[in-house]
Length: 310
Length: 310
Image 1: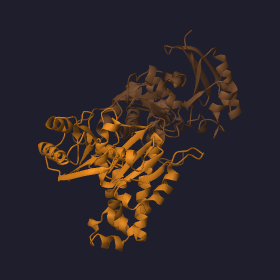
Image 2: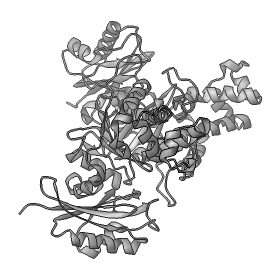
Image 3: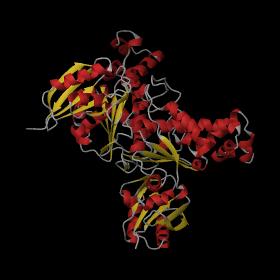
Image 4: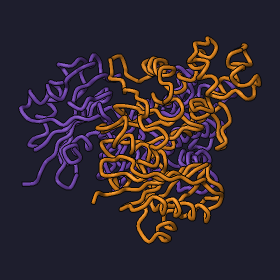
């Protein structure tokens, strides 16, 4: 009988469970809406686990600051879950061990084991979604940090006098370089000059312009949208340059909505990064940039793989 | 016969060699001025090694981007040393293996093995000198990066429209939070309001105000200097907050000239860092902040210890 590893990705809107066979292939899948409140979440997770059929191990990917004992310290995307012992409570309910890790770390593990970063000893996953999530593999190991909170790269401050962030500070990377950041840069640009195609895609209302409208217009070749995308790529590259100076990874794996249109972003990110890397006067090898291979299943797949990297 | 480990720290002005006994105690020491040009440096390193007496292993700490095969890719502090194969050439000259690592990484290893960070599994060394150097220990291992270039934290950009840096970009952390940065902040403050004590310590000339003058006046309680130190500590804390969000270390070890006067800096750094950490709405453990224990010998001691961590 083959080993069956289960993983559940706890998202802001749904809980997605998968079972992998011993080749890492998804052989079962089940999803339920994420309810509000901690007790209801444990109920839902137990229901997803029950619907997955037989499994040998179970991992959870959870957004937010996840402690090493599997509790949520704080999670902006889940209601009333501060200090919520999700891992221990689910383990008690199910009567077996549950592995728990931050969801972006899970996605990093999935890309490392079966995705775009197979074989890399030093790489970083950077997920450009509503915010920016991240995961670090250094010297062949997943970096968790002493509390388990490593990888909160979206709140790297890149401009202390910059745009206000809901986290309470100013100029966090994710204000500029996430999907929301692309939308914001688009709305800012509309204050300076008209971008009829972007406005049309947004249904005619400036306030409704989002990142995907800019991305779509840029993919069609719209000049104004392409300029916004270039500014956006400069912000992406600035963060990647800082991360490279700190950890010297061989590659970045970019995930999130952008992964659907790499040709729109990749050339500009590469060219800005080239100019921004600290290298003295000599040539230094550039980290390569790849796009995530696994898509929306990455978190659940990585959660299932947690026992293999712990 | 006890094991004798030798290490040489190649500085901008001098090459300092030490020999450690198997307790990590310095039992021999020799220094020579650092000459200009690569061939002369190899001669000097061979002379220092020769003067150290019997040793079993030899390590080198070298400033700049040091490749994993022990070559200098680029080193702003050493003349004409781009692509200089210092490790292999010295090994050839001496007829035995030579371990080579970036000097800040060596200092990190020394503080980890026999200094302020003994027993830590996750910590970062941050040396606030003329620039800012750094070293990373994550999950009980020294992080080198794929090329060996990890830890170049001084060139983390914190303000893309900020002060110009000799590296070619703007707003690098070391423009604000290093010893040079403290001097610059002092000179900027003098444009706004007089600081007679700082000016006096600098010999009466505004252009001669350096970090140590501000530090000294602040230690005496000078109000203007204390305000400059507070601004400086905010910049220090901003970088530490970014590093914490990324790697979640248990502690920072601060080195450099500041380590001589922790009472001037520590309270303000702590209080700014408290407010800057990303933590959602919950309490998260703060990384502790310690000052380096080993002083100017740290680089040579860590170089001697390289065989123990490789």
